[in-house]
Length: 163
Image 1: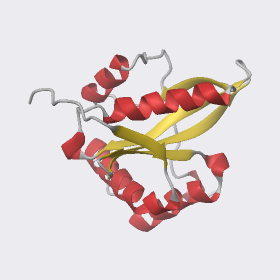
Image 2: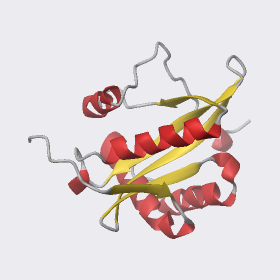
Image 3: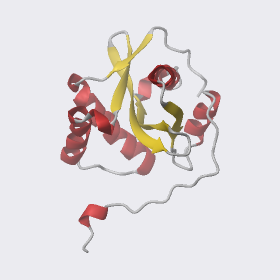
Image 4: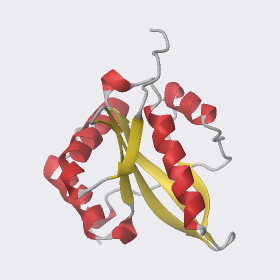
């Protein structure tokens, strides 16, 4: 599969509640493709709506080409006392299959960078990527990001564990 010609006229905008179902579908497809994980759609839908209900949780960006939604990205926040600034975490990145390798992520990322610079208190952009997703890692490097020395550890489903 060769590199496809980039899309012209990709527009990136803040998502609105009218984009919620697109975001739900994109997140569900992302989980399925990257982790072979089928998400609970009702829980996912509630999670997407929670971002719109409370902007302290983050915000979504939507990429459009010719009036069609083609990609998404969520930004969440992490305070860094070391830098006295906010890291923006890039999450829930998804591009519709037929629009991949055509500049959608690059447009979303450039828009996020511009917003971060305008914000004034953002000290950096971060994301995590599945370890075997070499194509995504190459894309992120191409956009100027670099791999850090950090590894991510987690405990999942803390709320559902017995005490």
